[in-house]
Amino acid sequence: MGLSTICRWDRWIGSYGYALWGSSHVDGFQHKHLSPPDTWKSLFAHEGLEPNDLGRSIKTADPVTSAPVWTETNPSLFQACQNPAHLEILRLLEENEPHTISVIAIGPLTNIALAASHAPKTLMRAKSIIVMGGTIDEPGNMSPLAEFNTFADSTAAARVYALTSPDPATTMPPFPPRRPLSEEDPGNDQGLLPPYPPKERFGSQRLHVTLFPLDITTTHEMKSDQFHRKVKPLLETGSPLAEWTTAFMVPTFRKMETLHSDGQRDGIAHLALHDPLCVWYALNGFSDPEAWILTKDEDIRVETTGQWTRGACITDKRDRKRSKDPDEEVEGDTDGWLSAKTGNRLQRCIATPGAALLGDLILDTVFGK
Image (cartoon, rainbow, N blue to C red):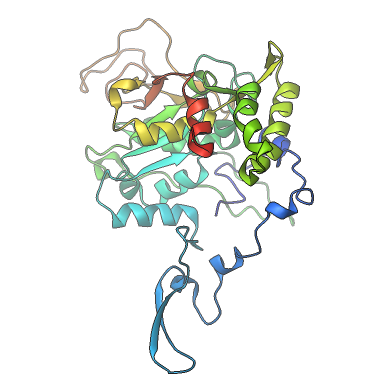
């Protein structure tokens, strides 16, 4: 499960995104016939079992013959876990071969930052951290410059990106001021993460981050008429899946119309496929890399303290030559934008197999062709 706090010392309020979207006003009472029984309770508890026994075969006795019987405590493909998310990420990376697991991060990077703080070298065993977040040249959706996920925990994003650098200390965010002491808030530094170990501890290892900012995700859309064409014949046959998806997709399209001036074009609502694009890359990008165009070693940094620019992604757009010699000192380069031994090194998606393909691919995958 995720956390209720972030890596910054202050709290944020989701005035956009999660708080605004909610569940798209889906009324559970109107769709009660589509709700399964409370079988989810068995995912987290089982009579006579410890939490760690879930998902394992256990030995019991037949009530009649007393013969030993092996049963699955949770035979479903989904295995619930009571560990904090960042520790579970590290466990999976530790138990598998290096560079065989990719992590898809479609929310604020709090858990990834916690994993990095707890065991940075273990996190570097990931094949890639695929991030939906940020915006480079397009406007933000949380502020004029910031995308929601990056804004929501800008410190976490800055810390994660710093692990892509030859020297993480050069792009680590500054530590915020200590909390004021009070009866309600004793100020025990809760939420502050320590600096990373010296770069010598990492050697040549760096975290591999692939970024999908708004610049690329907003070009991949599903249109309301496209969705309705797919589900209409299924609704006529009484498909429960079509009924349920319509229950939340229709209000979502309406919400897009109210949120954005261009939420409806030519009388048709458009829904950007931000998160599905990251999943598409994870499924297709490694097996068909020529269909995806990614920048390489791009120095993308996150603003964490600006009054109006918090969560903004900063890149060097100056026409300046960057040094390739790690031993060269670039005169006047106080922030390390031009040095070969400083700055972040992300790769960023700038082209996909086709923006018009994803919507139909999702619909065909969910409902069939």
